[in-house]
Image (cartoon, rainbow, N blue to C red; front, top):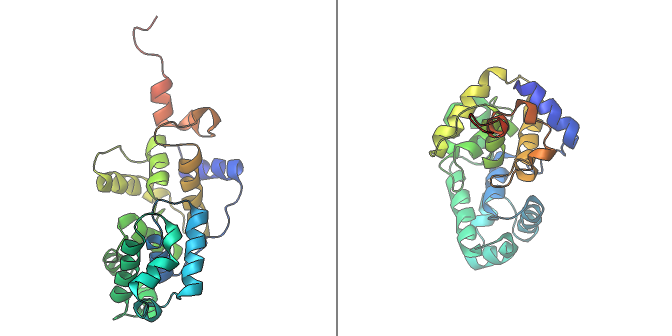
Length: 230
C-alpha cells in the first residue's frame, strides 16, 4: 500500500485529528512521564494539574519535594512516587543545557539531539523521533506501538520479536514516501496511532470495520484460502 493513500483513507474514516496537546520538546518529555498506562484524556488532565500545582519549568520541578510532586500527579496511574522521580530526573537532565538550549539543539542538530533525548527517562527511539517530528526537525512518523502495528501489518517493515529492529524496519520502509510537509506527517502520526488503538488492535483487531483491508498484508494472509482446504 502507498503511504499517502493509506493516510487519505484513515483521514476519510476518522476525520482530521485535533492539533497535538503538547509540542514543546521538554513539555513532551514531561507528558510522557507524568502518567503511566492511562488514556490520553486522563494523561492530559494530570499534565494540566502538574502545570497548575507545580509548573513545567525544570527549576519549578526541582524545587518541589518529591511527595508534593507525587501528590500532584497521583491520578496518572501506578507508582506516583516513581513517576515523580522521573520528572525530577528529566528536569535535572535538561538543566545544564536549558529548555531553550534543547530547542536550539533540536533545530540545528537533530541527529545529535536524538541521542540527547534518549538520555531522558521514558524516552526511547520512538519518543525521540516523535519529539523531533513535532518540532519540525526530522521527517519521520515517530510511530508508537499502536501506529507501528498498523504500519507493519499493511506491509511497511517486518514483524520482529526485537522491538527496536521492527521499529527501524518500518522507519526504513516508509522513508522514501515521507513528504516534506510536517503538518501532514504529524496528522499521519496521529491517525496511525488512533487506528491502532481503536481498530487495528493487537489481540482482537476489528478487521470488518477497517478501511485498509484490501491492501493489508496481515489481513490478506489470514483470509486467503488454505491450500488443500475443502
